[in-house]
Length: 438
Image (cartoon, rainbow, N blue to C red; front, side, top):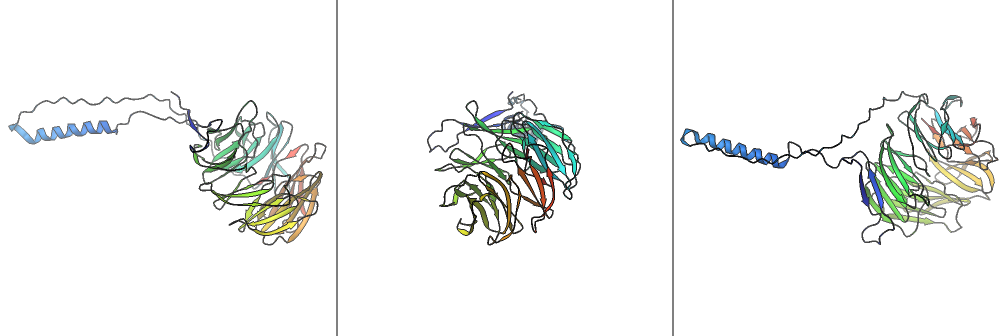
């Protein structure tokens, strides 16, 4: 008997024109029916009739002649099912001391590292990970396990304490960083002229594929997950999928493609296009507000950040702080010939990475989030910088090569008070993924 049951659902509501393809959520390891239980309604009814007949015959005693009654019980039909295999639970991974985890990669080969956060000393490094295409570009940490993902697969789980591999699975050609929520890892893959894109959900404990959502020729795009719900944008439609089985909770059609990297905060989903910010209600997808700047678009699809009731984003050379409630401008800050690349918020401070377009420049500034006043600024190298991470009183940031001829990537540990360098670790070759700390 089939245990994989395809559930076909149209991406758009029935009132809208039919889409050129059907999206499919395929749940794995689920049996839609099973044996008829002893507590089924027909069997209980028959037993009740028998007990009633026996009671009446006993009450009549010797004054009545008992008449034998033949009861026709319905035959219970048992449908044979194939038991769903339950994997043997993996033993809880050993606890690990706080470390800085990241991956380096060049070509299809990658290595995951764990560094001492105090001095940058290497605690362990994994064996070389061979992918189908491209190195590891996304690392995630949860429950003493490090999850590493390459652009062509595989997805690998390593013990955070010693780097020992726990499991690995093959994936499609992914196009977005790992997203994890409520014990489930979500991946998004691209589409091409030969195949559709997909969103895949894996159980974090053992790598079991739970379900797969067909996103069609548009591909899956960037993902965000929170409170058991996965959010994504496909074509002109914003979707919310239930994390446990991929069922559509709601879908909201747009007049334009929103794109960008979504951020979920305080019941709102924020999307950042090169020239516009969108805010949607996470409960039903209704649009709350939009902000569009008027000075031309930015060449970057950088992530925005949220904190202290503000949404921080940048367009070209201007940094904006918007009120999260309605999208109105709180303050803005313009730079000369320096493009805003990414922002991150922590402890009332806004950290902004910058670049100079065709001129490689890995700049980082720290601003007061309330008014944009600059506290300090540094240039780390001639590379492109990702949003920094504040953990344990230290600021960590990765710098990746801008050009193929550039030196290898670097992971820096900085003092958040003034941006001075505590230590740095330079890869032997290639890119460095954004670090995670824990």
